[in-house]
Image 1 (cartoon, rainbow, N blue to C red):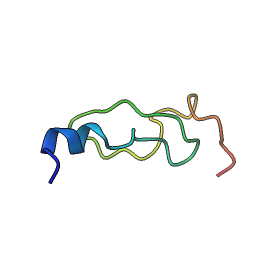
Image 2 (image 1 turned 60 degrees about the horizontal axis):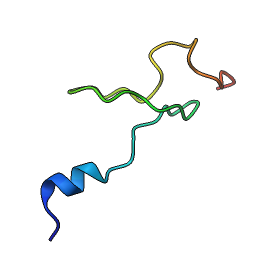
Image 3 (image 1 turned 90 degrees about the horizontal axis):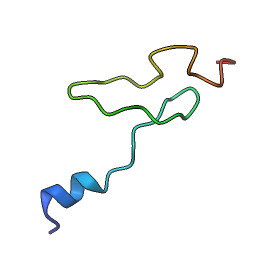
Image 4 (image 1 turned 90 degrees about the vertical axis):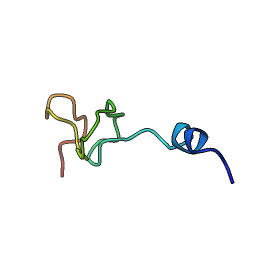
Length: 45
């Protein structure tokens, strides 16, 4: 069994569901898309 800290350090970065841009990690944040459409490079959805 791997240590819990190693497990969490190996999780992939959270990305925007619309454009794939990396989202900044925030405690208690369940965002799945960029917080601003200006940042989102794929607005066709």
